[in-house]
Length: 368
Image 1 (spheres, rainbow, N blue to C red):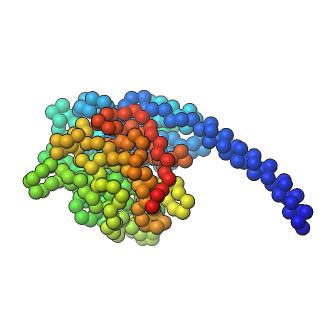
Image 2 (cartoon, rainbow, N blue to C red):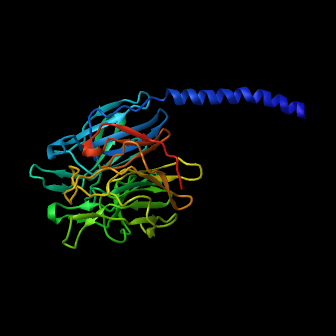
């Protein structure tokens, strides 16, 4: 018996060695992600997965001038085989948008809302739902968002439903943050209204859906005191439990304890399977000073990015600190992408409110 076991072991070792060698070669050959063709911030990002590898997308956003005419309709896609970006057909519309949300599902990318800015600085939320078909480099129009929103949190559920949680809606002084939770059925091209978010409505918050749970944090809300800046940062953190059976619009909301670091605005957030025991929602960057699209706070002070990266562990239901000193932190994000490389952050604003073309990869090594 022992002899037979030794013989089997001797045959197995070379096979295991070959598998490890192949894995290392594949990791070594994985191309580095190139910078975007042009610097952009507040761009909607998404990731899709197919046999060729992960494809990353970036849509619209604002360029280095940070003025109304620097807002772009540009769209880019990264080739997983080369790590290089290619420019795709621009997003339809007479103007580019800021604070839109993008979610990839199967062979399509759904691009929701956002706002446009006119030459006088007026801002208007749009109800557009544009669907990009990468294989054909074309868009088609989905059913408009019932309550137009920008700076909302978007999350994919059961590979069919896309939730839009909160956000800003309206035009100029008539706009405000909303409590709406809107659910888009990608199969039927229809919308449903779910249980509204609790507490103070916010915009520029961050979060995602993991399993049957929505998690969102922070954002900004209107200062009703009449003293100080027009908008201030929220420190609220919430979880929404989606029913596993029955009506998915009946959400149970639960307040969570504070996350690591200060309350922040426009954090990069995304959900993924990195981790030993459970999926996590990761949060990185953002700033504790709510600001307009130029990076200058509503309090008149320049906003600067936070170096803190943290995560919500779906297995323990607790927060984890990933890094208190993330290299080259950024702000002004519409999401991050969880890949086998790590947490991919596309564009954004660096220190000094500088719009960047960098594609940063944060390695998530959690510290409780």
